[in-house]
Image (tube, rainbow, N blue to C red; front, side):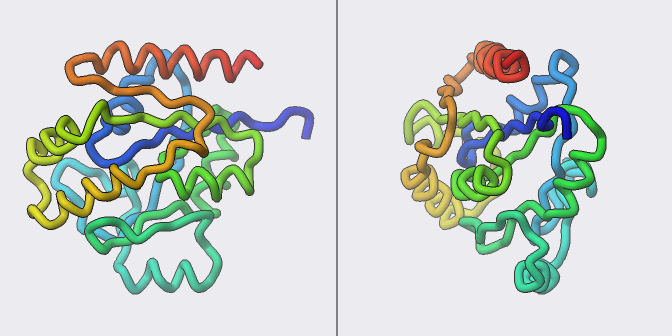
Length: 188
């Protein structure tokens, strides 16, 4: 292979704004996103095969046992989320910059398989901001929000190449910083 394909990871805990950052990258950054597999129910705003591949918890557990997942994690709500080997291979076949969205443990796993990956962590400014964002989404029960808050507290940014704080009302600035880091990575 003449040149390794470029892979980036953008991730952060619930409420960090990672999905908004990823959505703001195009059209300036041309990439193909690896579609994550999830065992939770599809939200009304989500599209099967674009946002996630939605499967049952039993099917997800079967894929784990069969070694079909690059990485996976049981989420704060008890559901599984992860990335399949097939999903990564499909993205790599397209010959573009590949984008993955993983949690911090997934970043560690992906870097073992793809050592040339560039990982950008999106950080929430503080716990109070995180709580406000999670509550404003109005999609989780109080106990799920508490589990998500614990996950935010426990998030490990040590696996990332760069960490960017996504301040309230400054999403455009956060996106601009992420684009700058991606362009530097692509130029290297």
